[in-house]
Length: 427
Ligand SMILES: [Zn+2]
Image (cartoon, rainbow, N blue to C red; front, top):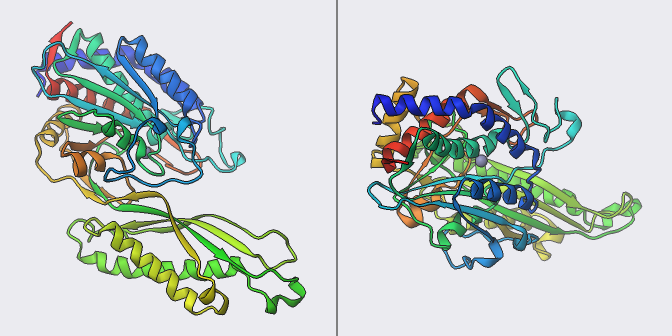
C-alpha cells in the first residue's frame, strides 16, 4: 500500500483541489448529454484533458469498425457520426509500474417531466452535502473522481510510473459500444477501473441485458365496429404479459445460480417505451414497444433471445390476427453478456488494500441487477475490470443526486489506487 507520507500528501492534494472538483462536476452536469447529444460535453472534456497536458484522441463511433467484435450491440435510429468519444493518454517516460485504464461514461438517461424534479435536472444545486442533477450520480461524479484523482497525484508532485488512459465514453446506457470502441481502437492496459457509483463497494458481477423492439400490426376499422378489426396496442399488451411470465420462470431458476441465488428476482423485464395508433376512433393498426430484459451470467445471449422469441410466438398463436401476421422482435441496443469478476486478482487486492487504508473498513462486494462497461475488459480482452466508485441515489429517477463527502473520499481512494497500481515517480 502507499506509505503514510504518500497517502497524507494525496489527501492534502484532494482537499486542496476539492472546491475546483465540485465546480468541475457542476459544469459537467449542466451538459444535457442525452443519447446523441453528448458532443458538446465531450468537447469540453477534451479541452479539459488537453489543458492538463494530456494527449487527447477525440473520435466518433462511425470511425471505428467494431460490428465484428464480441460484445458489439446493434443499433437503429442512431447517428454514430455524433457519438463523440475521448481518450487521454498520460504517458510515463519509462514503464516501471503497471498501466491502467480509467473509464467513465458521460451519457445520461432522459430526465422525464421536469416539473417532477425539486430542482431542474440540469441545474446542479448543492444542498446538505448532496449535488442534484441528471447524471450527477450516474456517473458524472465518478468521472470527476478519476480526473481529480489524477490531479491529486500531480498536486502532490507525483506522476504514475506507467501509462494511464483516461477515457470518457458514451452509449453505456444503451449498448456499451463506446467502451468497446476504445478497445477496437487499440487501447490496452494491465487493469481497468470504472468508478460507477457503487457506494464504495466492488461490483463482483452483473446480469446481462438485452434490448428489443416488439413490432405489432393490427387492422384499423371504425371503433363503431371494433369487433371486426384488430387492436395492435392491446395485442402488444398480451405479448408483454407473456414475457413477464417468462421472466418469472427465469427468476425461479435463478434461486440455484451461484452468484445471484440470494437476490430476489434478479432478472428484470421492462417495457420502457410504447408507440402506436394514429387516431382515437380507429383500432390501432400498429404498435411498437421498446423493451429491456436481463439474463443471468452463464446464459448465452442466443439462448436468451430464443426464449423471448418463443414467448412472443406463444402469445401470438392465441390471437387470430397475430397468428397470421406475426409480430417482429427486433434486437436493437444492448446485447450484453452477464459477467463475474473472478475474486482475488492482483488489481482487486490493491483496491481492497487502499480502500481499507482510506476508509478504515474492509471492502465489500455486491452483484448488480444492472449492467456496466467492465464486461468488455474482463470477458473479451482479459483485462481485469474493477467497477468501484462513489455514492448517491436516484439513478434514472427524479431528484438523482451525488453524495459529495463520499465523492471526496472516493477520489482519494482512486488516487491511492493509481499510486499503488502504477507506482509513482516524482515530477
Ligand atoms: Zn452508469
